[in-house]
Amino acid sequence: MKIIYIIFFVASIVLITNLEGNDNPKVRPSKESIENTDKLQLGIDLLIESDFQPINGKKIGLLTNNSGRTSEGILSAEAISKSKKCTLTTLFSPEHGFWTAVPAGDYVADEKLFDIPVISLYGKQRRPTREMLSECEIILIDIQDIGVRSYTYLSTIYNMLDAAAEYGIPVFILDRPNPLGGSVVDGNVVEKGKDSFVGIAPVAYVHGCTIGELAKMIVGEGWLHKDSKGKPRKCELTVIKMKNWNRKKVWEDTGLMWIPTSPHIPSPDACRGYATIGFLGELGIIGIGIGTTSPFQYIGMPDFKIAEFADKLSSYDFNGIKLIASKFRPLYGANSGKDCLGFYLKFAQKQGFAPFSAGIKIMLALRSVYPSLFTSMTMESKTKKMFEKVTGTDDLIEAFLNGSADEKILKLAVAGLDNYINIRQKYLLY
Image 1 (cartoon, helix red, strand yellow):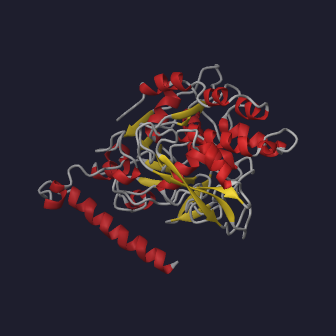
Image 2 (cartoon, rainbow, N blue to C red; image 1 turned 45 degrees about the vertical axis):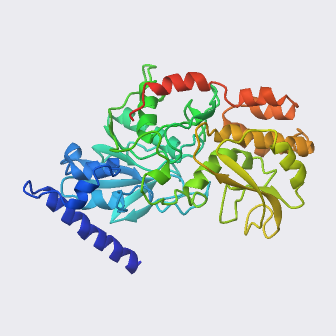
Image 3 (cartoon, rainbow, N blue to C red; image 1 turned 30 degrees about the horizontal axis):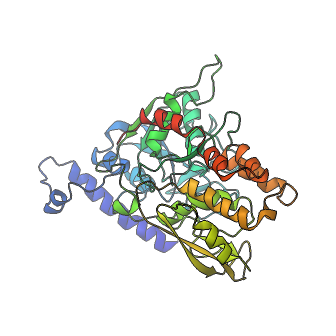
């Protein structure tokens, strides 16, 4: 703990020095700053650069976690807590906790950081109460999404927007990159009545937006809950846009260090793998690399019919994904301690990358080689239900179980996508 406090203290000195420099209008830009005019600036960077002008004199609630950092790697929570221009009263954390170390689905307890309460929104409550927000005049949101609808940070953002709308609190989104880039859009849209905490808004599975764009869409399209008059709630929303980011940039183009957003998302490729086979893992019928050092980048199991599977895979196009025959041994989870035959998913940034559709093709190949896995008798009702929640539809899994043709299933996999793309276009900021 002493080491952590020392790091916080040193980072704070650097931050305060930078802020003092910004207060002096006579300070000339350094040679380095001139050379880095194209350097990516995050929403939090621009808030600091403005000397916190938009929130000057306000009491702040901040939804964030370990992934919410400046481009220099300083925690946004620390930077805001050290500012003399505003008062950080409350921190809010999503699933996986502030330090992104709590396993998926596990209860997250409240804690303290910088002597500020950190209220868990993945504990007793998943939506902030009036009491939780009582010390907040403005809500800031700075959290790194991974570009996939079922990742629950989007649901926590939605709940915060809804609560802020109900209680009349303005919201500022400190925008961050989509690690998949802003051009990859794939997968079906959540059907009406099928919303859940892993599919809270009617967006594509791979949504192709930043959190700022998503927030604007949620509010602008009237997707928040209805008020007492039966009208969708609206909140006062401001997005502090990034500077020098465009939709073609994937994470590796940003120059930023990747901070694990959860225990099984240790890298940008894990984001791509989650988008591709994360939903398949819900069925529990094949290993997807959980328990290895490359989660969401393996598929396989002991005694896997690797040659037959490879032959079936060759009939599909996997643009941007290379499946390499491999062997892996999970340290925990399914098939723990057992050698598994299978494939390693190697990703390349190519135009037309469609991870969700690629995952559906992998499922089709699996059904062809192991048809017995796709029957109502062998598939557990609990895992089937979770798959339906994550995909936002019953139709996909029913089509697999009913032996529907590949073409029909691939069409169901993008149901509603064209309409979503048209809606999305109205809210793009970059």
